[in-house]
Length: 145
Image 1: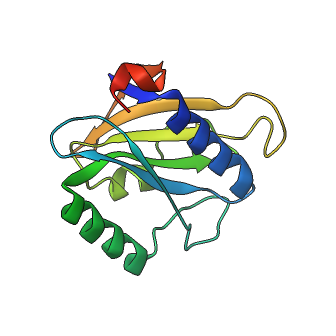
Image 2: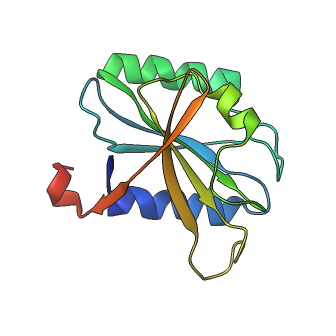
């Protein structure tokens, strides 16, 4: 189960809507071993594509060094789907390299960057196996954020 602060969910959704029609992507870092998503880090989709996302290697290296310096790890790796449901594609599964991370997908297919709800789902992806998990959205004070 993913427990995530409302502010982080709102930030992911806003990023997905802002970047629509291209896919948005980013990371939510948290203290090592805590499974607490705390620090929202939106990233640039280097592919600038409505059907694919790619972290810029230089930006990703910088982020991992920063997380290492801060005693953090990627708790959530997120991206958006602009025309399909919030379910990992084969490419998404092949790119999933963080076995402890929650992979969150936000689908903007119904309303794009307009007002309206989005579909948000979370998965664990380990060795190519996709397992959907429940998402509990909490107020900031419930997670210690």
